[in-house]
Image 1: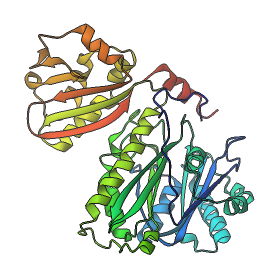
Image 2 (image 1 turned 120 degrees about the horizontal axis):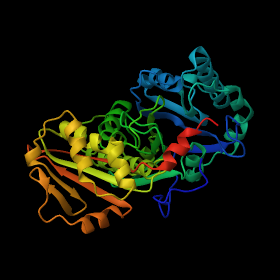
Image 3 (image 1 turned 60 degrees about the vertical axis):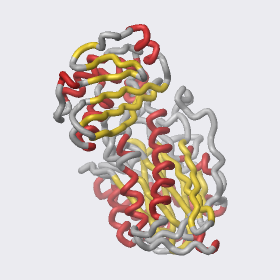
Length: 413
């Protein structure tokens, strides 16, 4: 966790209302860090539905494997998260550590270990001292409340420079339900999903299969549409919990994806997820610029996204942004290497509102001064129109600075 906060950090945090059926607490377990919280315990009411999406890495962590194995049951009672150690590439020791972690929590809560979900973030390849959780589990259990969301977000930080929280509300059956989320992530960030953890909670009564559909449908445009450095983690986890406590207000359970209320839930959830995902980019290691890459006119949406990610992941594009250099040639390069249909002579490129290239060459009205002014902004939009079809996509990234190298050069120390 850095002592220097990203210049792109939020200027203020939203008021995070309590969610009926969600309690949490943090503690110092000494997993890696000293004198800071590094473990978070969240308990949810019995019968809470859970959904998840995870990294597609072939070297996934032991906690990811544990959660995948238990997700089909669709029910959760608690979530335990630690920072400082990813419990990844730890072999049989990693499997034993997740089993011990779940048993410690299950014993304290007097519930089945299969209803305990786990997540870890930090250094890869170091055995997780799960026995450390035994010394803090009673403290975690005793001091739980539902108010301190910022504290919860701080406990899961690694190289993050600020905690990431988001909230939203939506009306169901004339009553208000709440969606709160926390996330961590700053480096090793790329779609599929990113080196990030995010945990989202709602009091809405939603069946597990519908909850999974909701979460999966919103991942592509949020957590899978951000990239800091093109590297996908072993530990990517997003879990969505629905406590169902709002049934007490007279809200009937959402048991089918065909329920007309699903559309408003989907939109509200998507807003919270996108907010969290963009905060991760704004905390990109060493980041000084927040960049939106928008591609239009592609042959398909998927083709547009591939090209957008080619631009967003290009070290040459990202270092040009860091240097405030309006080098549109770097964008042309990234479009050309993406492996997707593109026609050089139909290509148009904008930096902000300034068109810098059109029909395969520099815009005849190009102004270096105007383009350079755009690049001095903290928030920059790079837009490309391929002129081939109706496909479009938007992804978000940040610049690549010397600080990124410094942070990752001594990450294990």
